Image 1 (spheres, one colour):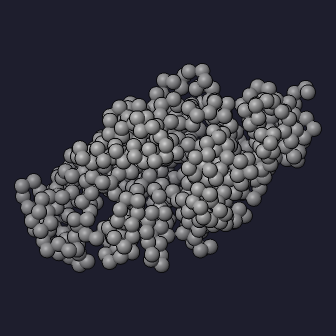
Image 2: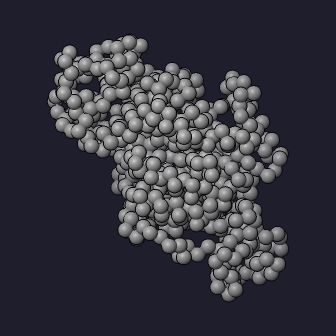
Image 3: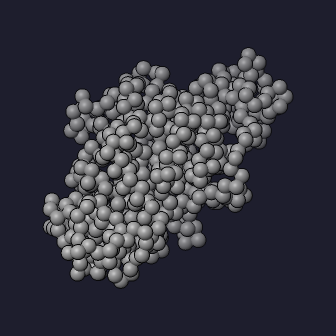
Length: 594
């Protein structure tokens, strides 16, 4: 027996469609309709018909086995046999995150295939997997940011049972799982929410059109729809945390922002479940209030992505200055990013032609609340041809990028394949049944990059299956010498991060950076450690501000340290113990003869 409920406040009649059988639903308060179906149970299909129309999928459907416009199927979440009873979650602060896309992480593109690779991530040193969106979207392949059935799990990946098996397998190996969710818009194909009620409003506009209705008439239920969705992933699928996509596009003029309300509800759920749960936001406004505690007047989210750190590292190592990289590239900017997170903290942005950001108090907000990275799906996939940084710079500089991220005071994140310098691109791809929409997506993508001076013949067709195929990781190349060496470098950096307390310290006011723009060297001090980078074309001595006592890790074989300096090869990095806080450990080495 099942009770079906749906919110349709403007409907004059709603029927539950059970195959050819239609059963009239009863109007409750607040625009909710319900019906008891004694003969309906887990695995049975149903849909809703509004005012005599065709059957529509349930907005809160957990399973859409025939696609996002097909009938919904009931799921009994209590029937899954979990093996993680002793799992108590994983606090995200300072852990090593790994972003992956189920559809291209393996050739099979399924949860079960991805689960077989989890031991590799454990051995490598990952703490938390950050899954790109798995909410159901139209078509069989895509990034996931065009989801339209927000409670359902994409069927080609393995559906709801597949996601549960994946999370269960991760927890059994000690891995946390975060899930990327998109609440700022729905995809262009298969979205039926507007036929049920005022889920969208023309009072606010976003890059995707009318905004999700968070503050207009009827918005109480829309907010509840999103918050209940977040809680469902954490509760029903045992997910440990959520990454909230582009929260700057959540237009909400209420006194209590939906993000603050969400943070309160998630914290309450975590207390009831008896395990750590967390929220990470993608946010481009550089406002620390998002990750400031509610007691101090903030929203109380646990962390946010920090693009400024990425831009500073990328522009410094690649030399690129187009678009938003025009504000980055100097060693001074790199130093500000690594010691403070936000480069634009109220300062002028040439890219935006205005001031941007808000002051960041390094003594009050720990660096662990900022997620730092050298690559993400956005920063790779939103390039015209989806090339990774490994195709833009030599492998020596890949070692430097990894060291700057993994020795930083932030919560580091690695994009799938980055750890071995994957040669496969990560390109934008999608699939839609409507040929007109497919054509519009292809033409729009090419027009966008034509405006930036790209040859449109180089821009891959997003709806060509070959574009998605090219983006699948090639796991075999990890065995090739150069890839294996880079993989081992990442592994050793993660191990060093765990063994050296100074590298686990999230206090940004203890990070001190020094540099010489003309000479091309950069030093980041982390307590008794110095991360020494030589970007010059030749070997040179670099002052570290104290007496070096041991090199813990170096990307190149040649180094000498003496008299307050470390001499290292061109395009190399070394993590060095210094005398004012000597470090003893398994990686410390005796000073070589100079």
